Image (cartoon, rainbow, N blue to C red; front, side, top):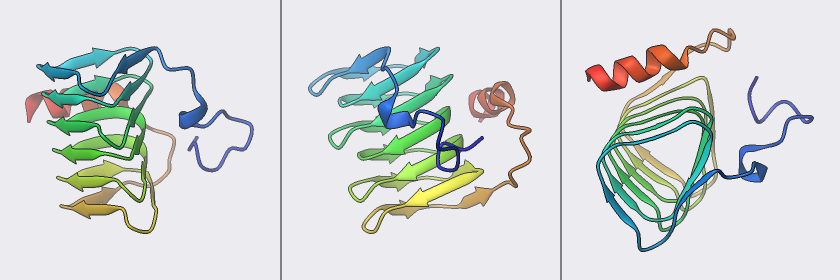
Length: 135
């Protein structure tokens, strides 16, 4: 189910964050995490998050991202594979997006290809991880 349509579900930006990469932190390498992550710093490498990712306004990811849910306030320079994606007004994405649900605030920007698969409930996170790793 999409985070945008189910009022009983806690939205991504209200989830308990299990991992935080704070402003000023720089990570060179891939990041893998099992739950919800907030990135305010810079990551150069692929980001594989099982549940959800919030990329803060100062956050920058240079690499591919795979997660179930994502909110982008910052900058992504790479491809994104996710079930649902929100690009906020300060969000910038340069790369291809593959998602089922997309919401873009006025001012949010995406430069790249967009592929939207139908909402059929067949989200396969493991397959998305394998596609990104193979790419």
